[in-house]
Amino acid sequence: MIASTPDLSRYAVRLVSVDEIKPSPENDDLYGNIAIDGQFIALVESIKKRGLEEPLILTADGFILSGHRRFHAAVEYLMYRKVPCRIRDDIHRENNPEFHTELAEYNPHRVKTVGSLLKEALLRDKDSDDTYSAIREYHETSSVVTADFMEINGTKHVLNVSKKKRPFLTAVQKVIGKLRDYWPLSIRQIHYNLLNKPPLISTPKRSIKPPEHYRYRNDKRSYTALVSLLKSARYHGHVSMTCIDDPTRPESIHTGWGSVSEFVQEEIAGFLDGYHRHRQDEQPRHIEMLCEKNTVLGMLRRVSREYYVPLTAGRGFCSIPVWRKMNERFRQSGRDAIDLTPFH
Image (cartoon, rainbow, N blue to C red; front, top):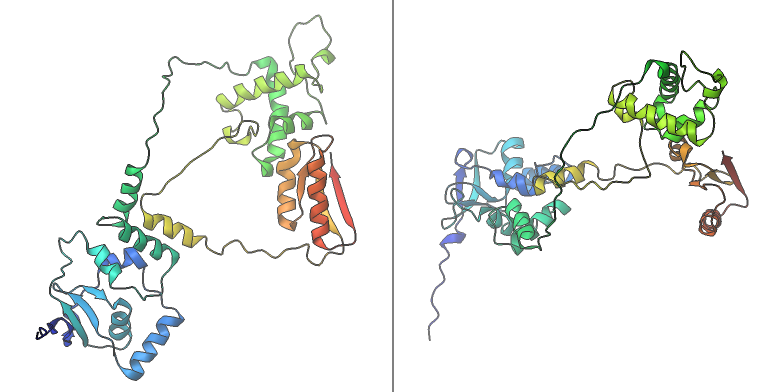
């Protein structure tokens, strides 16, 4: 039996004018813009020395399937007017929903980022015309979670701060302004700062009780009055809505991205962006910070973060796990002594 002669026309190389060659916009979607880095400069030097030994691969309508970096190096840096090309007469870019996949298949040996590899994997595993469709198909085939919804009706009215409580409001505003660098504050932080110079909670025009009866104190009545005042003050604009936080009521926020490309760009922007030198490395002693109250955590975090000092909130008497973890950090530091700085 005589073997049939294979058709070698698809491997024919011809010189094509650069004016007839068009980079594929989808290439940037998959691999990003061409980076002028050390590898690219080496490519330019290689073409300058040896010529463009590996031809570009083009679609029938003149778009680059393989060779975007070579094309850019030869045309933009070495001023080539014609480049060697192979033409795939059976592949078109226009009106081709599979073009992303075609492009990925023609670039298997390219040095790629993690994001590019992810997008190629999605295209290979999903019968989709682009990476966004691949992501969408994945979620559409995942299990659907149903939920019951509650309808909210009616309105809630909050009274403004009365004249007899305006001096109390002024004292609170001064504390909040003094602690501006540590926003958001907890109500307990404001409470303890008010105790340094206790104001009058109320200044009624007529009262059978002496003024000192209305003095702010470290008790439940005063704290409740502070909570009520801050509620009215925030709703009516006397203090900022953003100046107070409530860490006892945590929330979970789940965000998403409009496309894989958006996600990859965001990840790349923050890649290797968190390096800081460990400032305890050359200290003769291991240092720890221990605070008694959660109310001072916001202030102390800035200092502990800047100097890489572990910070623990003891909340009164510490439990055994807290002391054990502090001891483990001390042992791992290799220091001979520990300095423990308490904050009350």
